Image (cartoon, rainbow, N blue to C red; front, side, top):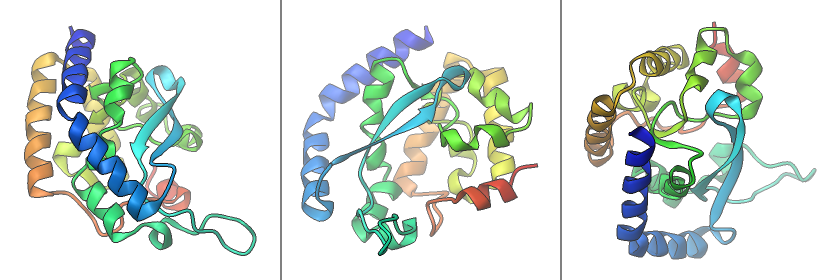
Length: 197
């Protein structure tokens, strides 16, 4: 039922939001240039890698050695707007449609974080990653990594269609109110390590 629900909602949303997707894509190109879509390998169900798609929110700025500058130097006001409104997440509906992601589940982090999880935290990969999740409606970026993982693991053990519907409803409310958004919407590996126990 969860997969069928995900497919039907993602398909309907992509059709309904197509004009908005096109508008955002045009604005991203005008403000940030190409490519419009940012893709990155993330761990999916059972930590199997997949390509996740988002609208680009940062410029391609590099230092004299050709290395990317940190996120705070590359993100723009427009990029922050896309993140705070979650418009940058809309292309992930395609990931849901093809089955790599679910509408609801633990947010997919970076592949390089996998060795850092303890045994309990690793159980967050026993469910498909989601566009939104239990941690997102219970603090989003305003809670610690340890709390996020605890919330993710709770969801994996208690997931149901009824709970997914509640999370989706609460997500809409959070996005409209822009709750749980911090000034720095990014995290480095060192900060991530420092918050794991």
